[in-house]
Image (cartoon, rainbow, N blue to C red; front, top):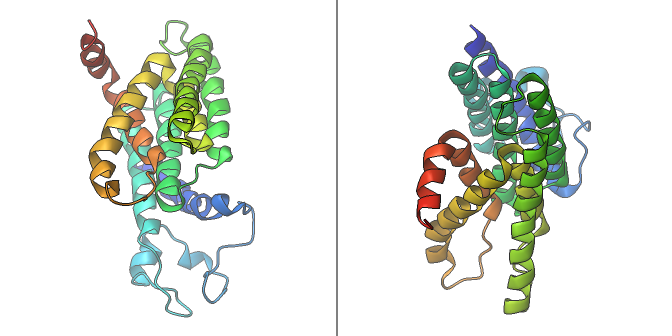
Length: 255
């Protein structure tokens, strides 16, 4: 029952994430105006905003003008439902589930925003740093033996953001142009706050590896930008769930 309740709540959160993904890159407010069609400007009724169901019922089109509604909406809602329900199924109603849900929800929002707009809003990255450190404090109080406490979260945030900051400085000097956006640096500070310094390093490695495999062939003869945040999100998710075995393998490369 708890799993289905969490999944239902995830659907609602996913609907809110869609609003954040579309408005934050343009500096819009999350509080207003109410949901409306970007083409005809008509305010949407509550029954047009039922997660997934409304999109299916309307066959992916606006109820007023017939403008196509991006498939992003139901996919993000479904992904959020899986994140919320899945983590409760794995961790139960526990602090671990709360941490996992918070991190994965932030990663989902960042990944989609960066893939679509090549922007990582500060509200998600810096807000995530604050949330990650706050959860680390709560974790340390409730479970003093937990691997990620306040000290590990702060160090992880500094290391995660610091590594990409150094890469950005060196890359800018070497290529005579901006080599990395500030949003990626802030995002890694957020990931470090959740995963600690070891998790941050592994995330960077996995994210860079995935980005290289996918985007190097696509950008070989073009100037297409690489949404690094998308691949860092993937690396962070892999690190969170498979961090132990992956860290052993990764560190074994140097030992």
